[in-house]
Amino acid sequence: MHQIGQPLPDGARLCAHDHHPQLIESRGTPRGQTLIGRIVPAQFHVECVRCNTATVPALTREKALKRWNANRPSINQIPLCDLGLVRQRVFDAIATAA
Ligand SMILES: [Zn+2]
Image 1 (cartoon, rainbow, N blue to C red):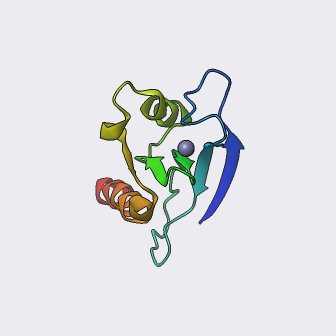
Image 2 (tube, rainbow, N blue to C red):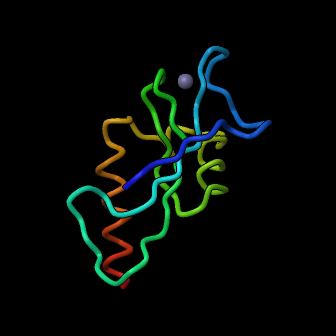
């Protein structure tokens, strides 16, 4: 798996004036997983390292940004330390649907 980060587009919610949240695209399978013969869709999330928070991974960047900009971000956000586990659950749902 590899990840590509980019700044949020203009108009996206900023958590604090000196924070720099990023939109992250994750490609490939999570560590230790294989899904032979299947193309694994990219997952997207927004994270702020200084807030130690990320959005629940989504399959589109638009949905990740929508979760970040939601009026009630606590529903759509998780601690950074849980990101790998939640990403694994999304991957499992994809694999199960295969
Ligand atoms: Zn922040």
